[in-house]
Every structure is written in C-alpha cells, then in structure tokens.
Image (cartoon, rainbow, N blue to C red; front, side, top):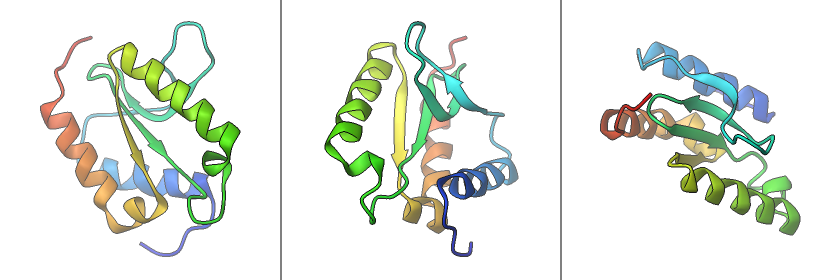
Length: 114
C-alpha cells in the first residue's frame, strides 16, 4: 500500500483490504451507543466488534490532545460496558496489513450474537 495522508483514505484502504479478504460485511460509521452520538469507523454488530483508526498519531492529531484523548477513553469504555470489543489501529497498522490481520482474528474468536 502506498502513502496515504487523510484518515478517510486510511479507512478506505482498510475497507478495501477487508473486502478482499472475504471477511463478513461491515458497517461504516456505525452508531453503537443507544444514547450518545458516538460512532465507530467499522463495526460488525453481530459480533460486537468495532474498529477505530487513530489518525494523526505522529503529528499531534485530535486523539493525542488531552480533550480528544479523554473523550476517546470515555467512548471506548462505554463501548466495552455495552459488550463491544474495540480494536484501535494506527496509520502504520493499516498500511502494513497488521490491522486487517487482527480484525480477521478478532472475528474468528468473537461470539456471534445478534
């Protein structure tokens, strides 16, 4: 995979890779919480598996600033309380293929519920 600049480009790269791997279909920008407007980048609701791409990890993006980091912690903790398995990946994880391999393993071991 080549160099990608924006978070949306990273998400698109991961989406393409996941589709090529033949994994179960995912939902994009899935709203997982019944009251808050939080969304996860990718979700498999039937497995309660969520994926977040953490953009800007090397350039001080929103996820690395105190307010953004604190809000992310709240969001991820609430997801866990609702039974979600949240997997977080960096740009390097996506570009190296590591993210897709972890998602494949996560879906293989996650209990299917819905």
